[in-house]
Amino acid sequence: MPAESAIIRIEAVEKRYQLGDEVEVRALRGVDLEVSAGSYLAIMGPSGSGKSTLLNLLGCLDRPSAGRYFLGGEDVSQMPDDALSEARGRKIGFIFQSYNLIAQLTVIENIQVPLLYQGKDLRAYHDHCLKLAELVGLGDRLHHRPNQLSGGQQQRVAVARSLVNDPLMILADEPTGNLDSKTGQEVLDLIDRLNQGGKTIILVTHDDRVASRAHRIIHMKDGLIDREVVMRPPPGRTPTSAN
Image (cartoon, rainbow, N blue to C red; front, side):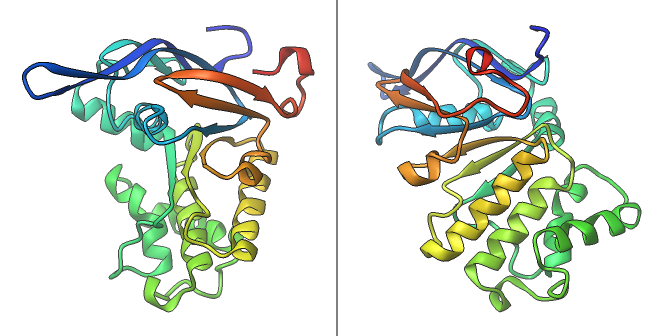
């Protein structure tokens, strides 16, 4: 790993899918990517560009057909399912377009869900979860269920949930896709503040205005990174050294 320890490093990553007996689809065709700690990266690309496949690999929801993926210095490329799931729970926080909250659970219980998957004692993390609820502006909604919240409030719960295990990075997949422009702006402002506090953010979007908040934008095309735009360096980095 380089001295500026990369949160993510993927090397010559390919992903192939078999359709029927003879047709092979190459969704990724040898992608190289590094993301440094504290960065804010946006991934863009049309349907079929490999953007969703790359997202699934970065989120440890799938494995590459070839190449290597280092997440926090750990090679997760060919981990068995149990180990990959455990690494995903420890190292990645997810924010989804559709919130993915559990309808029967309250705000505080939804925030706690990743702790349950990790087998942690909820009592030991009670104050931590309360602070996260307050961080996203829901300290007065702890016992509300998702159907009692607005879309923006539900996404704030998702943001708090993504932070509960103090992951290496937050992976946000179209986090404002189901929100009106004002509410979307508020959620993006919250994500900006997380990055300013040192959290690494990887955001997938089709919206240029959303992507412009990032330090760096990569555009996918035909299974490759077609081009890259450096908007501004991460805090403490010079433009020439920005990843």
